[in-house]
Amino acid sequence: MRSGARYGGRKAMAGMGSVAERLIEVAPRIPVRDLATLREQFPGLGPEDIADRLIATAVKGTMTVGAGVGAAAMLPTPPAMPAELTAETLGVAAVEYKLIAELHEVYGLRVPGSARERATAYLWSWTEQRGIDVLKLSTVNVALGSTMKKEMRQRLLRRTLRNLPTLTPFMVGAAVGAVMNRRDTRKLAKRVRHDLRAAQLPWPELPEAPTPPGAAVTGTLWQPPAVES
Image (cartoon, rainbow, N blue to C red; front, side):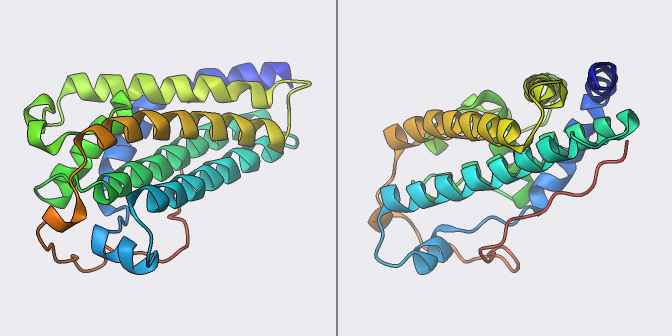
């Protein structure tokens, strides 16, 4: 089991570049609810209460992903583990990306531009673990350059390395993966939320923004595409 975990770790680390590219590719297509949709789905709640709900849902989602991989680690053949690790990393990143995008909506700080431009900005937010002040967007390089891709690969790698203990003896199981993801997602949410609160725009001051077709989602979690080993 220990040699299988080391094998899985090495192969997962080698594949972080392709996982980063996959995240960049799918991010613009991840359904994000705009402020109008969120207010309709959470009637009578203010920004803080809605943010609490979004964070709780995201934490539950990443815990589910972590628990799935932790449980799978109990019965794998070693070659299967790189796919499990990279799938978890991509799945957690997608859930956290969606959380970040919707928190920006809740705090009145939706990034302007096309879906791809917003996705780039929110990926930067996820990579740096910071909220975006839309009044100071010059701090974000809208062009997805090599520096941002490198930083994203490093963050994905760090997440994967933190998940490796779920594959080692005496630490195998669903509970470990779930707890680790809960901690990391809550930490990310706290940091991003702190930044957004500082730059928050009150709802009455926001212009009406139409919801693009297909942008709203139901309560089901977005499922990331499978990652081939």
